[in-house]
Length: 360
View 1 (cartoon, rainbow, N blue to C red):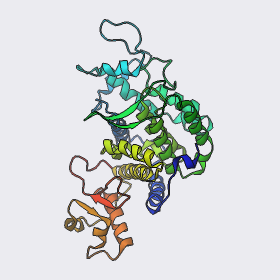
View 2: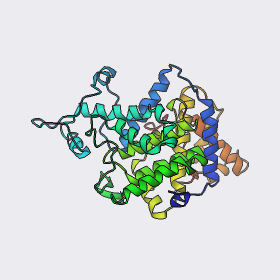
View 3: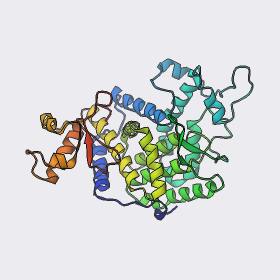
């Protein structure tokens, strides 16, 4: 895979996001602090990643139940069945009515393990195939048979909008998958290391979503691998970038952007969406930890309503020009008073409602 395979343009918006991610990452602590707010952000990221895959896991379980889950036990068949569950499809059937709480705990534990896989950070560039297979194994412990974890899929797959049953996009053909996976691995070991960290992590994220290399858990694999690349480049200290929170506000838009990027053969808008999510997550963590306290005039927002553009801000009587409008918007973003509209290329903003305010 070369850069030509995933064309993109680093325009002013993306370049600004890359710079802002660098600035915010430097604000955050690099060593464990014991702060409960750090753990809370990680829990939020875990649940958001599961939400993006349509998992029924919605709340954090009792820590005692999670700790008591046997790490070596395999998922068993349905009542009356025998043997270890083999495929992801077999496992997911048990999420039907009534829900299987044990399986939900295993899903959650898998995402936690992937987000904590710091021992794989350097391997992602040194031995990418091994790192991705091992990351997949950790995600699916107890959910699929051990010999299926990390094995390239042999069946066709498509990503669906579950609400209406519509196919959002088709993933790579199984026959083309080995060559495509090898190309991605070669890119990670070489050209990816020369790109800005946020950009390379976004391309890795996109390609894994497009390929769906394994039978199961490809979405959470893509997000976990992208997070590992951010940590490799010091852009996700203590796992506090939590881009999953911003992405999970619009799950369908997230998957549709993958489809649009494939049709265009251009990842520019996807990379902006990803970089916005990274910056939003870093910003929210810095704010939650009391490391970001911008001086803002919230009353200036009143004339704008709940949905507005950067041009509307520029036209405010208290704003001199476009650079001043951008600076004002950054302060409002830092304070959590506004959010970017994903996919608008940094041009549209909204005032979040109570359900999403404070998500970073």
